[in-house]
Amino acid sequence: MTDASGSFVRGIWVGIATSAVLVHIWLAVELHTMRGLYAEFRSQPPLPTRITVSPLWLWTLPALGTLAIAALIARRPRRQLPYAALALALVLFAVATWHFSQAPIHALADAIH
Image (cartoon, rainbow, N blue to C red):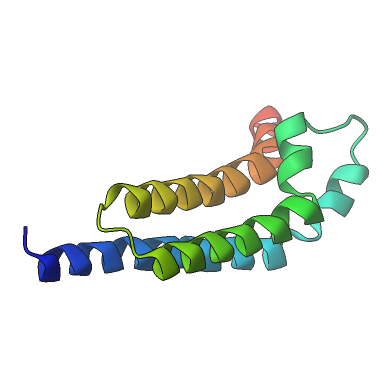
């Protein structure tokens, strides 16, 4: 693989990582009321839900992701593994945030049926 094509692929990974950070910021805006909603439940939601709706999780994760992307761009490693690993981790964190923040609602809806 030539350096130009390697650089292009690394750029794709950075784009995926940046998109995941932007999705997480959107989730932080959209899910900020979920904590209050779960406070009205009779029982406490599961630990993963409490973590993923906490403001600390919702706002720290995109900040750390942005710093990690900036550090990766500044260091410019030649190998693609750091880029791919960061992109995958940020995507998985965004998916986990969405899934665990909504899990009690889906469980309640399933119980109603």
